[in-house]
Length: 65
Image (cartoon, rainbow, N blue to C red; front, side):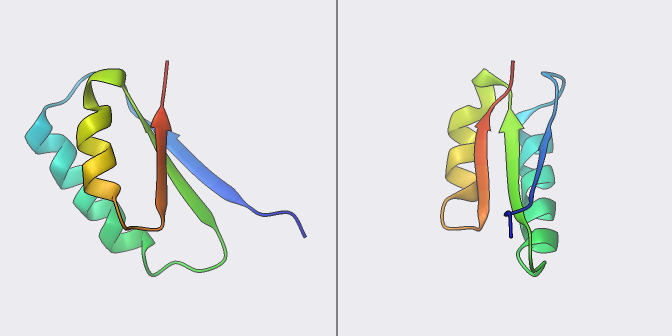
């Protein structure tokens, strides 16, 4: 069976504080979900924040263009 992946991205609008709230909510909601892989693709300026916030979680991360 093929693995299923749900990926999402957001545009550059936002702030570090807003990003932190979003990432915390995603971690809380998706860590308990079973049977799917998850990824978040963030704008380049936020990659360090996303990398740190998602470190150790099941949620993968990447860049969006």
